[in-house]
Picture (cartoon, rainbow, N blue to C red):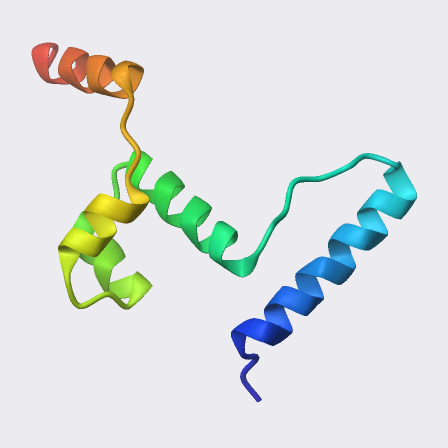
Length: 87
């Protein structure tokens, strides 16, 4: 039976509570949405096709993917320009 978002959120909360109890290190708030966001950002940065990611993420509009999940900073732009220049 598939798990709904609320089940995943409670499951994640339990894991985090257990981690904090064992290691006594406070963790940031992690939700299934944060994991989804992180997955997309890592896949986009690794070069996965945005249209493929749009399909995987289940969005009908690519602008949601590109404007919400993709984070580009100066170092990212510099590295990509360097790669293009050396091709």
